[in-house]
Image (tube, rainbow, N blue to C red; front, top):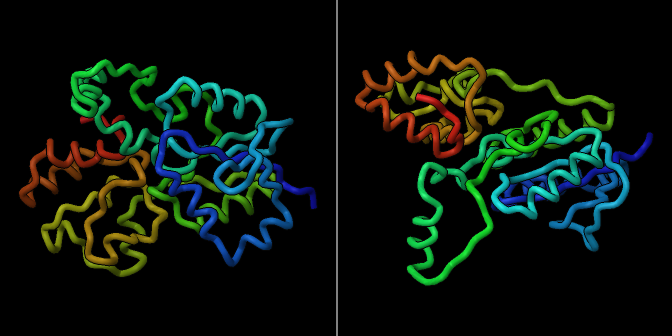
Length: 247
């Protein structure tokens, strides 16, 4: 079997998505036999982009010019470019304050001194380049990353998830936190695939995996309002991970 030549990079993010892959301790010995982690600054040194790649896995959003240069180079060198994690897919927490003045944010953070920044409002990868696939999550589940690598070894991408967290909850036979306990839970609007990790522990879904395709936003907002949560509170909660949510 031909070894899979990968580039794995992190932009503006916490590196948690890359760490999820490194946390696959039991599987890493087998992966090393079939995957060439050629460019992976978090795990391997030296890290130099050379030649072409079967795929590039990119974590994080873009907020600095040098990140754009790296992303464009990865896109040019890679047959497939895959957004890993919510920041890469939707902007994530880093984009939470995108609606506010960057000058005012710099002053609030650093004071009134002469602070300059060449950065810009954080943006998801798809705002700059073509993205071939998305593995969402904050961070993605280890199993999702392993399925991705298994698919790439066969020359295929995994089927995209299109169901909500509520489906995961029903599969685990959980009580609905929103309808049965009147606790704010965004599972009906959030992309599934996490196995309902938070609701299964009695914690309402926070929307960290981004929006489920064709979500019935108005119906979900009506139910939330019936349970005592105003529309703007729910929208603001959704926008913590995906600023592109529209009200």
